[in-house]
Structures are given as structure tokens and as C-alpha cells.
Image 1 (cartoon, helix red, strand yellow):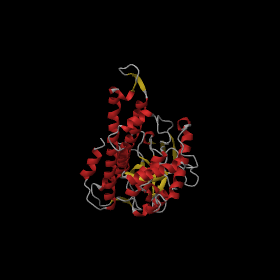
Image 2: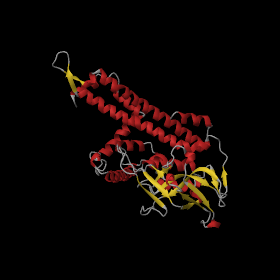
Image 3: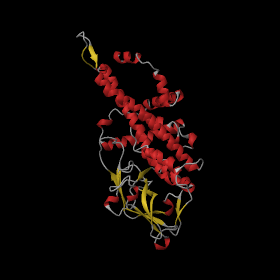
Length: 398
């Protein structure tokens, strides 16, 4: 190790290991993290190497990232990660450690960050029993398709429609939904995992019931590609939006639907239902419970805060270390070169950002913890959750 770095570290007035344990969630979690990192680093396949990432074509990076995902699942199965969650790898407390050890973005991430949580929180028991095992086994890989070319966070203005089609008018037994993009601006745009990876999407669309009444926005599970050969299904047009400044493993995509027919039961029906005749019915829930669909979006924002802290920490660590070993200018004796880190101006630039990385880290963790608690209470029906409590945490992101 560089002598200057060794000298700086010896000056520390705190225990590096204790801070590491705190950030990891305890000494046992630090030990487990290091075990998983070693497994990834020493994996004989070599697929987890990130050395040539910056030199790969974007398509090659996407393919490589998918290969990393496949190998990750193999390792998790071998190690028993997820066994405590009925084989659901992404629910294991070791899964985030595996993702961090890989240290590269996976194009499947929206599957566990948004798609699976939507099914878990917004679908009824019968729907969850049907779809979650497919998600667990990676046969159904999904994304969350809300944002359109014309509208994003203004959910009430979204234009994609889901119109009920009864059996008496050409629908299948039990009825169908016709998912349609009526305008160019109604095209879904920018959802991650949509461009190439996902074979299903949780589409946010305007529900038109059997009486022709617009019932507002609801969630619909829409098949995009065949689960056998991954070919696009009839009426679905989707693709990758192309290269970006960063995050190029992720296939942010677009989608248009030309009167795509899906089963009636592909509408999320935990809190509302539509029967075989197209009759719309809201189930009795609290005002807070009616806002549960927003919790998934807020969780994503909490992940963004957490990721911002992680990336800012990496940037400031690199900068601080370089500033310790890089020398520029001489001290008063005219012979000893000064470390760049000793310049007050450099400290003024770096140290506030280093402190901010800790703020982002703890804020992201705390907000996500609150959101998970809210979701669990709402889904289980245990514990009182008020609309004010949901609104309060939503306001914290503004």
C-alpha cells in the first residue's frame, strides 16, 4: 500500500472496523458480506469481471449483464440463498449483498424493485399464487410501465386504455381487457427492463368498465413476449431507447399496444374488482390503503437516495485517496512536496460531499425501512395506517 495512505489511515481517531460494521448492519453482516464478495471475486466462470465494461458495445454490455444475472441465480441456488423465503432469492437478506458484490447494474433489477412488489401488494391471493412462483423461477420477468411520452408523474393524465370486452361481444370466457395506445403520446417510454429483457409488464392504464365508464388508473399485467422463445406477442411493439450517458446495462424502453387482449383477471384485484359483466366494484378499504400503489413508487425513490449515497461515497473515496497520494507544490522548506489533501480548498470541496454521502446513506435506509413497514401493515391489515402518515412520507421526497 502507498505510504501516504498508510500514514493517513494511522491518524484516524475512530475504528474503521466499527464504522464498517455500523454501515453493514452489524459485525455478522460484515462477515457475510465479505464471504459473498469473495465468492463473486473467485467465481471460476470469470463472468463477474468488470474490467472491460467501458470498452464493450452497449449491446454486449447488456448481454454480459444478463449472463451475470444467470450466474448469480445459479450461485444463490447453490448457497441456499432464498431457501428461507420459499426459494424467493430476491426476498433474502443476503440478496442485496450479492447485488453489491457484483458491482454492476443488472437489466433485471426492475423485476424485483417494482414488478414483484406490485404483484405482492396489489393482487389478490389467487393472482399471487399464480404469478409469484413464475417470478420466483424467473419464467416471468417483469417491468413497471407507467411513464408515457406525454405524461409521467401526472398519473391521472395517462392515456393508455384498458377497455372491458365481455364474452357477449367477442371476448373470451369471463371477459377480457383490450390494452390500447390511442395516441403517440400514450406510448410507454423509459421504463427499465422493458426494452429487451422483460416478458411481462405491469401496465398502468385507464380502466373503461363494461358500462363505458372511465374508472381511472389501474394496474394490468400485460404479456409482452413469449415465455418460450421471447418473441414479441401480437399487438405489442417495444424496443430499447438506445445509449445513455450512464446506466447502459439497463434497457430502458418504449412500448405501444395495438388492441392487445388480456384476460379479465390480469387486472390487479386486491382492492377493486370487475366481474364477468364488466361491473366495477371497489372493496372496502381505508383511505391509506387506497394509496398503497404509490408506496412502490416511493420505495424506488428511497432506492435512488440510497444509490446516490453509495455512488457519492465511491466518488469521494476515490478523490480523497488520490488527494492523499498526489503531491503538488512545496512546503516552506522548498523541498518537501505537499499532499493535495492538505490544501484547505481541496478539503472544502471534498469533505462536505463525503459527509453528504453518509446523510444520503442513512436517509435512504430510514425512509425505505418506513416504507417497508407501511407496506407490510397495509397488506397484512395489522396496525392502523393513516392517510396522513402516507402523505407525510411522500412529502419527504419533494
